[in-house]
Image (cartoon, rainbow, N blue to C red):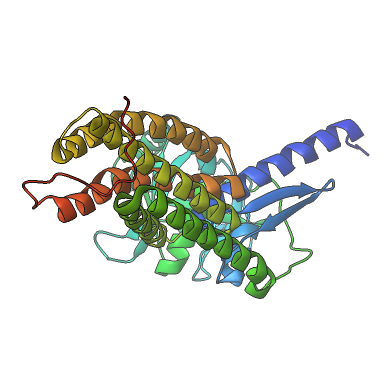
Length: 400
């Protein structure tokens, strides 16, 4: 009786666990869940947290399925069919059933597997308009598929879906001609939802080992209401304090900056809503940071204008030069911060990525609001005054 070395068994378990975590990451990203958390717990458990998921049953079904794909040739020879009718499976063949319950004899040799896939997208058959899954093979898979179809014209090729040890023939079409280019279509008795789920599973990869759900908890939104309310209140009070200070210190130009800041927040919320992003506590922290960065750009512009006024420039000229000179500095400072945000977005995970998304979007909206929106308010108020002698921009100290 053979037994596996304990060290090798532990190593195989570690490899399977890591691969399963990678596959779960891919599948959750396909589901579009905001800020998922996937952590290892103990020797053989994985904890998955999915905030904002509405259909928990579908999420569990997608995460737990161990779908793999195999392509084999069908043996339709008279001898094989005669043996099948007598309940005998000849040597070198295996008996499977399709979705209609029809028995098929397939050769044991596996032509292609899911490892040869580079992409899988749900769609429709161009001829029958039935739901289908369009597969894209890698270079090796495309070459093998082209050679096999060229050598077996007139024979049938079966595509099997294997889940938890149970194999099912999805489709077994007749090879009419050589198929090159690495494009394969799966169509059969499936609806659009099944096609989309199958494409997601094949695209995200298969699990190295089957998994079972041992514990499930559904946490309602009331648990985090207090923290969310505190986050919103802190952002709101910070905005009010900032607005009061900037309006008192810079007077009317401070009011313009506050209006531009409000537009900035509205634009940021609109972009998050457009992307269907979930605003969590890290996201609220990024919003608060965005407010500070946006008002910093407005302060830079106002101080540039005040410098031009100190040098004796006329108000219209000072406003124009101030915005032009501040633009390059604002762009440089925000680009460096954007690079840091992109690094968090690429290499971070979970709450870090949620913070990075809001942070990067906030940088873009703050540049737009500081340069375009605030200048629009200034032009709307002062632009029609031809003989402008003074602007409300606070105390302009002139050197003696």
